[in-house]
Image 1 (cartoon, rainbow over the protein chains, first blue to last red):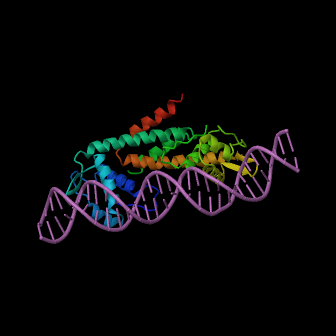
Image 2 (cartoon, rainbow over the protein chains, first blue to last red):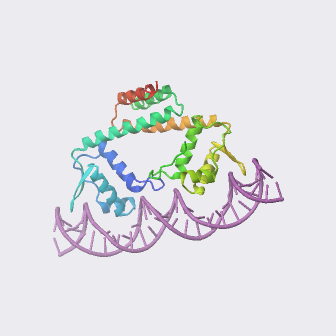
Image 3 (cartoon, rainbow over the protein chains, first blue to last red):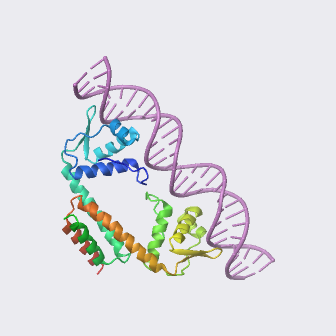
Length: 123
Length: 123
DNA sequence: CTAACTGTACTATTCGTGTTAGTACAGTTG
DNA sequence: CAACTGTACTAACACGAATAGTACAGTTAG
């Protein structure tokens, strides 16, 4: 489900980009699946079509989707490579966070425990 | 050293807040240490005094510093409790990141390796 | 006491970015 | 042909960040 939070500091178009990329990477949106049209999604979310268009344009640039003028926007068939990039991004972000946590004085064992908790609670 | 990056999307006053809080938490700024005056720091960083004032006001609200009108701004004597809060914040942020990484398909072992690397490279 | 510092509190203005509003045009489809 | 699509514009608006300027009271070194 595609949603936006008007109270969030993050711009709407960025929320849309992250939201749709995540759905695609997680397989909730299949390759070649038809996305809502610019105008339709704008109506559903009660925001301006230009904002949707801005998000779709960036998603196409990131190879998350492709567009066929007159037809619509569709999930990219090689979404797998996007997923790979996304995992890499997550790791890099974690690297930064670890360094920040370390020099804030957070013990490695605390992070270790947290990591175990998160990766076990889904069982 | 207190710095700001004009190209950063994060507002200058927020950069200052994080920057000074980090320096204080890490002990690079000692309790009761005298901070640069609003006007002096503004001159050094080539930004408006109001922006410095905004950051100092928020830092005081967070108990990172205290101010004596006419005298200046100083690092809080009980900066230790701020450091504790900061460690807690870092852990919570990591929790969010772990969940994101997990459902982006990042393997636990990858994160484990990264964690070990970061916490060993300082040896 | 005075001059030169401090913090603090305002108002007004400027600036950048996100968002909206509106229009237009070409391709697609039933 | 009618009703969809994406795409490309321009203009206006809204909001927050940042600047500019002024003012006033407390502190301190001379």
